[in-house]
Image (tube, rainbow, N blue to C red):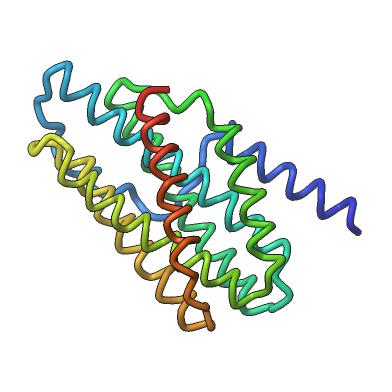
Length: 207
């Protein structure tokens, strides 16, 4: 049975990094007309969406690692539901990157493997700390999305609508983690998470 589980999880990793992500919900902003953007604005918007796509790659891996180590059925179910919504975010951001003429990060396999490792480590500390790590991650993602919404070209409402719905989902994920018993992480851990996130976002903007 362990071999079967490993095969399933490996397949999930391959699909996340290399295959087109599915979605049940329509892409936010799909009915918003495409705004006129000059070449610099288009490149900038595509790079921001690439960063957000990388963030969703990382979220998938984190949730996968945490679900692997959680012993609580309700928590695992909540992690799997949140992971599905992050999969939809992958679909939306990838679609928007394509519309803007951009590309996904070349380092996605690296982002995924690193985040999967972090998810497993967080889960090994027990469900309360596992959920605490999840809640803090979602709070930082929320802040990061707000920053990108301000940095997008003002007329790019299609991208803005995607980030707005993603933010709503991330807030709900954090609230769910708290409801399930998340512990507040120590300050140094939060700071380390911010520094690693900053490194990822700066690198993914370029590569």
